[in-house]
Image (cartoon, rainbow, N blue to C red; front, side, top):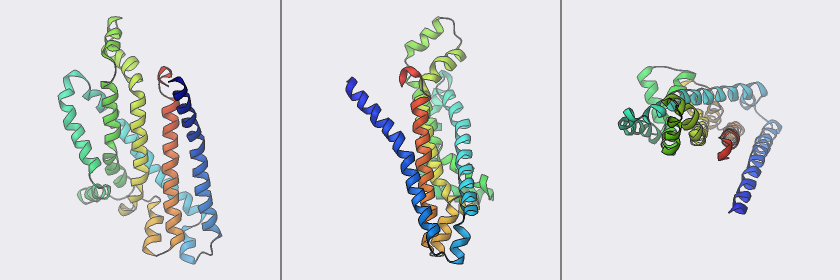
Length: 251
């Protein structure tokens, strides 16, 4: 058993080392190809350092704004739904979040746009946050429900208040599950953020949409590969967080 765990740990550490290297090689190779290609005037407007940095930054802003909003909503809500007086409401909220996850992302985005009339970054952030809410909410609920009741009783037995037990016992033990949900949500946010272009939200979807509509393969490939690279990078950051931010005894 110990040998198997050791091999698994080595495999995980190897993946943590290999994944960012693969991202650098993939993105660097495609950028080198794109910049070395004989670009026409339309392609040159999209494939230049200034434009690529701008749309990548916009994409990151959308992704991290979505993740921050999901954290602010899902974790406190998940905590409330695991309290004894609110447990009956948990299926209702999880069902609503499941509807958001099950719906096509483009449908959620367009319906929000039609209902609100908003455009720009927040017109993308709000519906994408609803779309990516489920993994963090569900994992927060499952993580807290999975805490051994004996540990909760022991905390209360030594005089801790309910808030102290939550803060010092329940939440630390639920952190690995919450981080796993956050990792999933962040990867989803990066992927779905490519649709922000349809509500004038910017991001790498602008390159993909331009390349597709104007039949410019270098622009299309560059935008798609940058989006893939970002998704792989944030997945790697999530894996690092899961590995090193959880309780030491559970690593």
